[in-house]
Amino acid sequence: MSILVTGATGFVGRNVVRQLVERGEGVRALTRNPGTASLPAEVEVVRGDLAEPASLASALKGVERMYLFPVDEAAEEVVALAKAAGVRRIVDLSAASVTVGLHVNPVEAVVEAAGLEWTHVRPCGFMANMLQIWAPMVREAREVRYPFADEPMNLIHEADIAAVAVAALLEDGHDGAAYTLTGPAPVTVREQVAAIGAALGEPVRYTEVTREEARSILKAQGGFAAESADLMLGFVDYGGAAASGADGYADQDWSALLKPWPDGERVLGRPARSYAEWARDHVADFR
Image 1 (cartoon, rainbow, N blue to C red):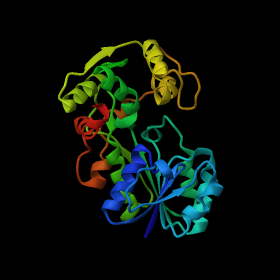
Image 2: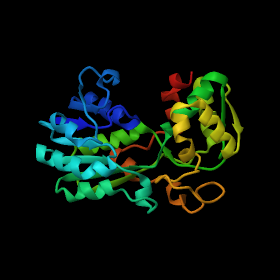
Image 3: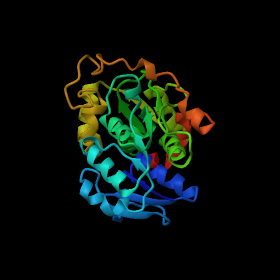
Image 4: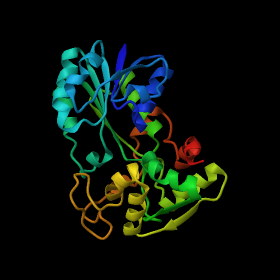
């Protein structure tokens, strides 16, 4: 069986690839830059871009199952091409915000309408979302400067998201399911920084700053931090429009996502990994 993994070098996609290889599956990985993919040697790495569906023709040949990274406006064409090529099962990466009515993901409707086997994987916030923002701070000064000190959030390890996706790709019984995935318990920014320090075995100081101060810090940091600052800090919403309220999210009720949801444990037969485990898994990034 040949499985196509799109978004193969992302936080989740890279874990999907690795876990499929560990289970002895044939994996084809789609990426825009094969030369820098750094994927396992067993993987067939192919060039392609979901935003340019015509580039997927060779990648889809012989593929039976596909892990679909969010594809937005090109979804209909991508899914149609996959179906025409013989793909019969699609597992798509969505978001927990869809479950609680804060977001609509049109890709889900496209996948459902295709007449194939499908599973939606809907994770809450990634533990890894802050990696590219906080890791440079920790490496440079053993300090994190960020707002929202004691606001709880439910976050999930990217390897757990991948594990559910892999189960849906390989096992029967997941057709037509939408799995909402969370971590085992809410965790605050202050607690996250403490867990990073514990993983390093060194003190990491946390300094709470305002959203405006944090925006200046991230813009100066450049790269991903600068590009994502307005969204991560709540100055704009997921559609790019200006967000309302003092904290940027006053018009959205995220409380339903603070509780642990049971879907992941039902699929995997074990609890979700904790933030402390995630920090240990990424200690090299912070060191």
